[in-house]
Amino acid sequence: MPELPDVEIQKEYLDATALHKRIAKTQILSRDLLKETTPRKLRTALKGHEFKSSRRHGKYLFARVSSEGKWVVFHFGMTGFLKYFRQEDEKPEYTRILFSFTNEYHLAYVAQRKLGLIQLINDMEGFIEKHKLGPDALDPGFTFKQFRESLGDGRAMVKSALMNQKALAGVGNIYSDEILYQAGIDPRRRTGDLSGEEQKRLYRQMHRVLKTAIDKRADPSGFPRSFIIPHRRGDNKCPGGGELKSLKVSGRTSFYCPGRQK
DNA sequence: CCTATAGCCTGACGGC
DNA sequence: TGCCGTCAGGCTATAG
Image (cartoon, rainbow, N blue to C red; front, top):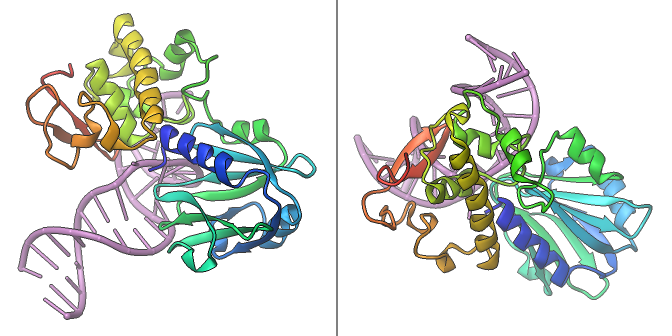
């Protein structure tokens, strides 16, 4: 669920539902997700305030609180998402944090596996620096030149480089496969061996893939026929014909089409 | 410095 | 049915 397009949809969801609603109560149902803060600090920082805007950087979502310039940071790990609902008994399973508003609606941070984080911060740029996050993959200011520098020209496999959040932020296991497929590049290629033309194709396809996914609300069932994402763990067919193959790259299962990716 | 690997957390699934 | 190993769209810390 939670790569750049998915988190962008979470942001749109937050904006459309929980923004500008007065927070009456915050329940921390699992402390494990809280980083560098305590339930008490989070509760008191939010009580009586509202989320007044949001931003996304890579796979992180930041919600600005209408008090002292604080932000709540959400990271969704592999299984996290937000759910806005009316009746408290509709509370989703695995709700870890529950924000309740004075309009009697609730916003749940749901995560089956506790691999994400929720944090209270004063400074968004400071947070990004501390985590050494690279530029957001869809930041308009993230030029081809910067992209090439981010990827590097070493011995790292190109798929690992795309997924390295310190190089560029937002691309994970699923979308790196799609970008490499669309660019016609084998995931095991070393970044140092890519031609300028191949780097250019990667940059262009990264934009096209991520934007298309956001446009389709990060729902693979609506993705173009030419995408491989709907086929992985499905019919295992390449859109252009042939079998989808899988292998491990830096410990992650990767799907690719040998016929098209060189 | 660089890259690759194990560990974290919880549940689903397949094989025996 | 029950148990076990493996795997899952995350990140960090550690090992080479």
